[in-house]
Image 1 (spheres, helix red, strand yellow):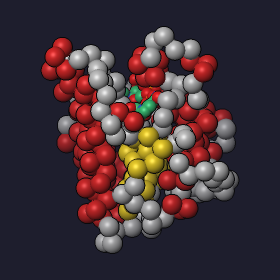
Image 2 (cartoon, helix red, strand yellow):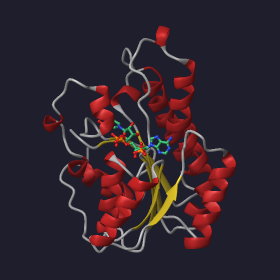
Image 3 (spheres, protein in one colour):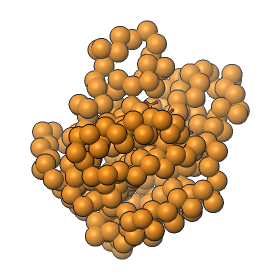
Image 4 (cartoon, protein in one colour):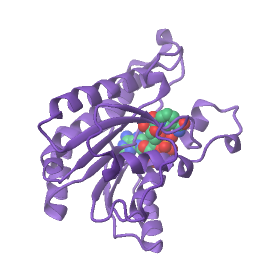
Length: 248
Ligand code: NDP
């Protein structure tokens, strides 16, 4: 955790930032927060109507005009990622940050009963898509003065836990991707790469994982934004290869 971080109001001015899973939950809050701090956000997600709603909220709040890019990360192939990178290049010519927030929970069940197809889906959305997007966007991130890539981890991706199946394994893989990429870029690039575990946060995914829990007792996405801002803004320049927790 980063303690009491107070971001400058214009922390992300002139930055172009991609947020995946921007239509709901933590990604939605992050996209709105980044825009409120001056960023032009590219909203990527599965459900166009949700992305449009976030777009409207950002416009109404007076933020820089966002861009929308619907993509089903469960279906996406490398060609789709390449096409997306070309579109970002044509529109903006560079990229200053990526927040990988899109994710799926999969089943909460013992390995013995885990469906192979569900396992593959979780790995595609949570791991393969983050790899494919990051890989194809690296040349555009290199064009930034100081770019930040933030992967979303989880406590079950740091220590395995029964019945979390592919989700836990996908989050271990995410930490691995973060570490490998950070090490490759260390000293030779302006791109920093870190992972962030949001901790228990009031979203649809949390409610699906803990159906008996009263959502009102869970931290709201808006309340964990300081760490997201810290990692996306220039105050974290030079910080790379590290695992962060948004809550204590
Ligand atoms: P939500 O389910 O609220 O949001 C996930 C977002 O990812 C949604 O906007 C969803 O789109 C999008 N998404 C899912 N599948 C796809 C797909 N195939 N293609 C494109 N987009 C997709 O979850 P959270 O906000 O809670 O989760 C955000 C991140 O934080 C995830 O990586 C999660 O693993 C992680 N996390 C969350 C915790 C929590 O307590 N909430 C704790 C630890 C980690 P759509 O709305 O259209 O379905």
